[in-house]
Image (tube, rainbow, N blue to C red; front, top):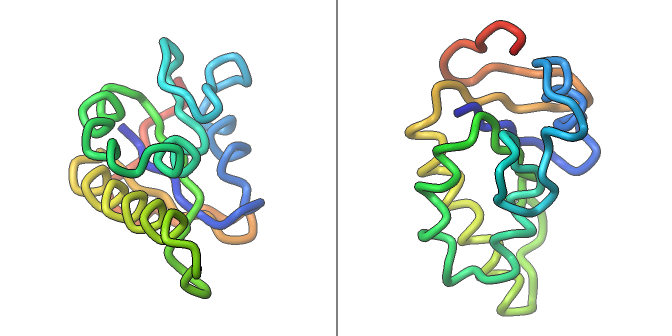
Length: 120
């Protein structure tokens, strides 16, 4: 599994497409039969208490894409704080077990763990 992280609008989805994935391969905030999960943070924010239960299913995916949510001002709203913390902790666990971790900044990918496979 490849974990792709970065800020909103950083080019994460476009980067996944350079790996050979198409729009039809990408599930937006859903875990289904497609190989790529996009907007992991939206899945977690919906039910932060269930984040741990997502781990094994996410590890079966080829690519997981998540917006970074741990920077910036700490939200006043308790549910926002719980969602942010649960997303961060889940990403840590995913990164530990991922084949590769890529962070995007301004559309520029930096591999911070492992090596990327060739195009699919």
